[in-house]
Image (tube, rainbow, N blue to C red; front, side, top):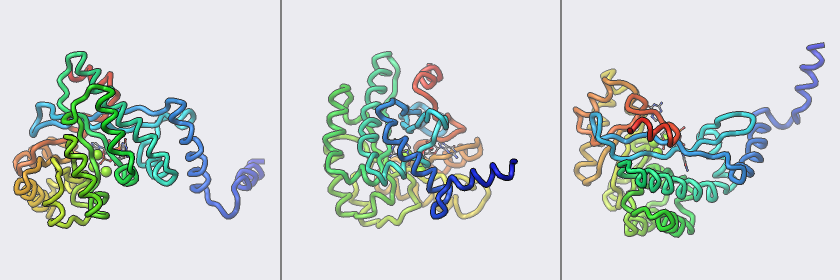
Length: 275
Ligand code: C2E
Ligand code: MG
Ligand code: MG
Ligand code: MG
């Protein structure tokens, strides 16, 4: 009966482990094979000069095409990749693929000023990072100034002295540095002043209710003023409406990114849209 089946199905799970833990374990095992099975791809989202262009660059966002589950989003598997250390290999693939795609677009005559790649905390602190980036740029003939590395504010401020040393080395290479999800961490302004960053990216948490008339507009204005003082570009993420686009432009945001301006999509679709 259905009741028995239900009971049997339930018994498949160890009493000590909940369903979530089982799924996580299974997903982690699949993740170990994902790179070899070529299950990853990058989607690209435009970063536009406010209010509506030109194109300042694109952000590469990782997608996992799981053989049974379909597309798995990074918030579900990046933490697993971090925990297992797989992020280092996956991250290397991402950096190289983003550079390869940028070079291909340029060879096709498309004007894409830069590609941004997200780095997780483990990647950022790994000793091999500098070499991987230099190799990917060289192998694909991409100038360092065309690559932007996005690290979250929390990652940058976790061990500020160590971060400063890593970022200095990277910026000497000539790559851009974007402080992602800005406003959600705990920045020391003294450190922020010294960080060789090129961009602050306002977290979408401040954009969501921006137009509603609460304190978010004042916070966004403060971040923009900070960016001006430190000579950093300020981009807002998560722009979903024309009203947000207008207000962010009025407040002085340099660039905008969000579903309203362009959803992340595969490289071929992005090229078609740009054309
Ligand atoms: P993030 O770097 O802050 O990326 C922005 C996220 O917001 C992306 O989600 C993007 O698809 C989504 N987004 C863009 N516009 C809008 C909008 O208007 N509204 C809303 N609600 N969302 C919008 P995604 O692709 O799921 O990525 C989530 C996070 O996963 C990223 O946050 C980043 O931290 C991480 N991630 C993505 N790709 C990579 C990667 O290659 N390596 C590493 N280490 N992390 C990655
Ligand atoms: Mg990002
Ligand atoms: Mg972000
Ligand atoms: Mg984020």
